[in-house]
Amino acid sequence: MYNDIVERAREIAEQILPLLGYELFDLQYRRQGRHWVLKVVIDKEDGYIGIDDCELVSREIEKELDKEDFIPSSYMLEVSSPGLDRPLRDEKDYKRFAGKLAKFVFNEPVEGLSSVVGWIKSVGEDGTLEITLKDTKKSLKVNLDEIKRANLEVEF
Image (cartoon, rainbow, N blue to C red; front, top):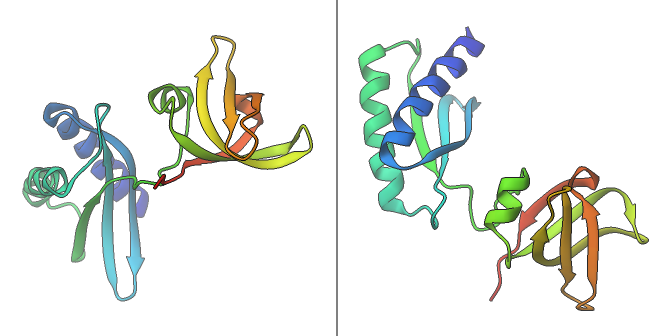
């Protein structure tokens, strides 16, 4: 039943979001304390998600969820952005955020480093990511498959 709820909620979000100019970043249905929460994380290619975006998406998804009424217990719908420190998950993300500061954690040490903070310089056709290290300004090249996880860093 749980998987059916997640699957149907995902289908609804994936139908509605492109019509509004957004994409689905993540969707979770989980217990939080004594309540169930359906968390929909949205993104858009050009810019960042604001409160107005979340309100619009929440209203539209809520209409469809109420109409279909397939979630048996009461729940809270929460719509949010991936955040300023959003995870970078694929080549598309690295290209989109070229020039931005990020923290990278590697599967195995690269040039003796298990993690680095630096600016995304470029992504090659061969899946090679070039990073300009924040502390030394040196250039580091790594294959995308060597990256365990990466998140944008907030610059002040």
